[in-house]
Amino acid sequence: IIYYLLFIKKDASGICPAMSFEGRCFHFSIDRGGTFTDVFAEIKRTDGTSTFKVLKLLSEDPANYPDAPREGIRRVLAETTWRSYPRDEPLDTSLIHSIRMGTTVATNALLERQGEPCALLVTKGFKDLLHIGNQARPKIFDLTAKGFDPLCQEVVEVDELVSIRLCGGGGVEGE
Image (tube, rainbow, N blue to C red; front, side, top):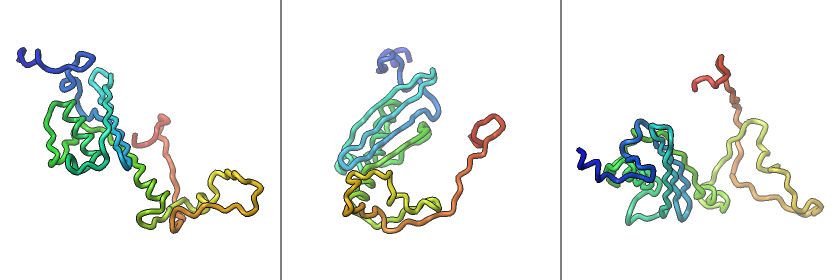
């Protein structure tokens, strides 16, 4: 065992990453763009500190991986835990606390009016929200100024109410 520990690669802090965390300590934030996918990982250690990993992958690279976000997560897990995570098998999610993912692909498709028709669901009374916008009027005195074409085919008003019940200590119930 001593021989093995002498040859374990350590990170900049001198701690072996595979031995300094436990539980669901991986937090991923991923931005999948049309060309590149950016992966940011925060790995919380048992001593309260964190290690950060950043990766940039091609969003489409079928010769090497089927899905860029999953590949980024796989690479971070493999590098940090020193375990093998084959590309053709599901990932072990027991160490993952959270995955936040955003994409510009859907936003661009919407703005370029490509893809399938869509509807916007809004709280009742806010149907004209996109039409009103932020009231920016670059040509305020131009009587022939045209508005923008709507981004969605239909706006549907929904009867809904968001409420937060506070518990005795002032926190949100269920936290």
